[in-house]
Amino acid sequence: MDNHTNHLSFTTKVNIGIENLLGNDQDQKGVIAVSGGRDSMVLLHLFYRYWLDNRLKLNTSVSSDPTKNIPFIVGHLDHQLRGKESTQDGEMVRNYCEKYQIPFTIKSVSIQEKQQETGGNLEEVAREIRYQFLLEVAEVNGASWVATAHHANDQAETILHRLIRGTGLQGLRGIHRERDLSEKVTLIHPLLEITRDEIDEYSKENQIPFRHDVTNDDTKMTRNRIRLELLPLLNEFNPKIVKILTQLGNQSEEAYHDQLMIAEFNLKHCLLPSAQGMRILSKAKLKELRDWQIKTLFRLLWQKENWPMTNMFYAHWERIVDIVRKNIPAIDFPDGIRIKSGPMVIQIGKR
Image (cartoon, rainbow, N blue to C red; front, side, top):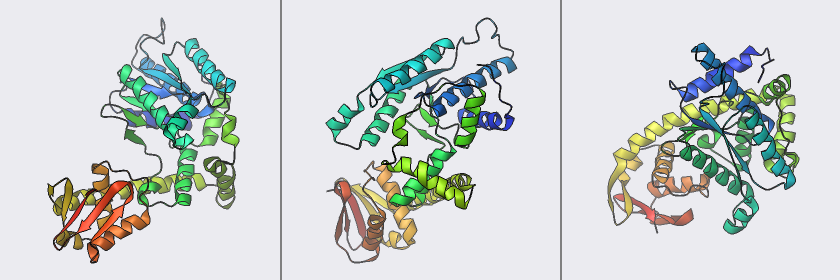
């Protein structure tokens, strides 16, 4: 993997991102998600070179076998959505890994069959199965992290997509820099500060092979239309639109964590002993809070109870404020959650 690029700022940004995400133990084992597309192939190339550079800096012998003890494994999932094209994606990933003696795992799953079984949205089913696969690869190989190639443009698209659908501060955070896949495995995004143009230029200068997924060109899908039509249009108004949206995501992340700390404190302050499977809160103490504090408190409670939030929209959180402030005896919420209001307490739980 010869490096011909002279973009030190690009590689420096990526290396800093990797170091920040991996922490002190740079040799902890991980999984790199590689679809075969340009972004994930660049991510693999960067991780491989980063690892080799570290070995050389530490004066570790790499001359006899530079690939010995590579601390990551490639995970590739064939969704079987594009027939022969999907199979060829996997073959390219296999050939690339074998060329550089990089450990890899390839699995083939019919996403359409899984979608028909569950009746869910195809894109959501594919995403869920993909992360299940990556977590399995991590657990089998004793890995503590999984890296995907989401970048700054993906972040901008995600924030725009959520704005279009309707979102609050939590949604404006976009793609998290890192999040837990399980108690022992963390999902990381080392390229989140890198733009698509930078990745494209790097791949050309380093002659990195990749496969193009033609389904990404289908503007019938909202996400593709945002990428291919809306972002270029917004770029005409401000060429820095991607940077602006990613900054918005970072600022929202900071504000969200501040709100979360306040919500934790308020929840402990208002929460009373549970009874008959219901969570009980002091109505008087809830009334002392501002409206936004009530909403963030109940959103946190929803998360702690692992109640579904997909069907909870802005109007629902507003109704929770109403039941605290007004004389409303009970309200039913999506997915079987009911809130009852008494003279002294608010009760919430599965009906």
